[in-house]
Image 1 (cartoon, protein in one colour):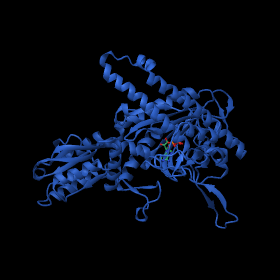
Image 2: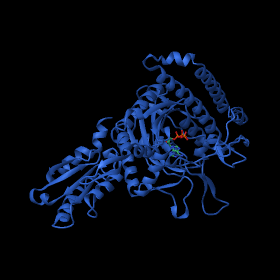
Image 3: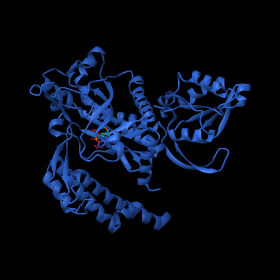
Image 4: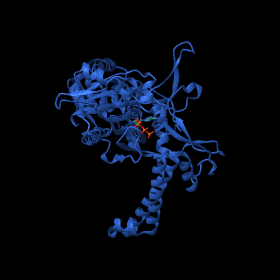
Length: 516
Ligand code: ATP
């Protein structure tokens, strides 16, 4: 199946099974805004909890925070967002479609790269075992020509971005004959900068009201509270402050479902360190964050690092962790070395000292910061996309059929186990309720008695429930039940007594955290 098709199926599946709905759907939706349904909210909570526990509970020197979305307007002057948080926008005059100029160029670069890789792949097939890839890359005229094109375009683009030279960005688009995918023409407007922050008014009387912004990142809530937390928590450097919460960006082109939303959730941690130690800690957090992703068991080959060529206004080193989505490798998390940019600027703009006295070295300094910043919604997308599978199976007890199953990591699954009486008669529902009442304190359970057992299994597969407990007539005699596994569809008969221990073993987050 083409990747685009899988992507569409995942979106439809998430809607059908209560994971994600278009926002305000009865009014035909609102651009790039989504609501999480009953199963989506559970999955999202579990991802958030996995992150929070890994950060705050597992690290003695990291503490949590829950700062307000609204912040003093000066915050965003100090952080550079008023002057520098914008994307270059360009319109095609024929289709009237709007694009991010930088993305048009990056997509074009990707196309050249794809061409090169295709050429190499073809040659590898042709030459078989004798293929010398390096030699081929250095000598094939088609590859070297495209490589040259790629390098020239890339350095021209990086220079133009660094200088924020909008005319040059436009010229690059024209010179490379980059056309609008809708109209097919290169009839472009000028490139303009577009600030991504949403603004609103604070206060009831319009003359008195102040323009304030909805935060475009959660990080600034941490920076302005740096001293509050450090002093009240008696924190010693190095230490971290972690926070999860909503962020808002008026994205120019919001597409690809929950990949690029206008309201989304971030999970950020700022790690405060001694200046001069930033490269060490940057590498440390890159590795530690990659380990967190890989512990989910979704496949090590699904992840890669991407080092930034163009650094944000606050960073001196930055890398993304990318995940292989059905729509290609995309960023899920950024690790940034932010120097003392933020604390230093808040000190300037607020007039309040943002410094730390280090008892180990007897020095006073403005700490440097390593940031880890992950999008909860993109993480959600990666978990769902990785788990989605269509399989041909022998229907338990009947003919062949297709099942759609979400193979989610059990610790993240919205429902951990379904409790299913085989029939609605003979006291089986009562026995099932007894089991529910025992397990529901520790695990999110679902009770279902309607429809055939096969159909109930399918419904649970579709929402990713890792275990189904079936209560049959034998259960009444010997207090055993069957436990049916989502992925293998195999069944074991086990004593009811042992269920809590078995479930704990299989679905607890502890197992994940132990891998970190
Ligand atoms: P991109 O380059 O994709 O626009 P970014 O580099 O601007 O992302 P950061 O500012 O580093 O993103 O934000 C940290 C994380 O927040 C990203 O890794 C991503 O997971 C998430 N994120 C950023 N923008 C959005 C958005 N519009 N919708 C959903 N998640 C987002």
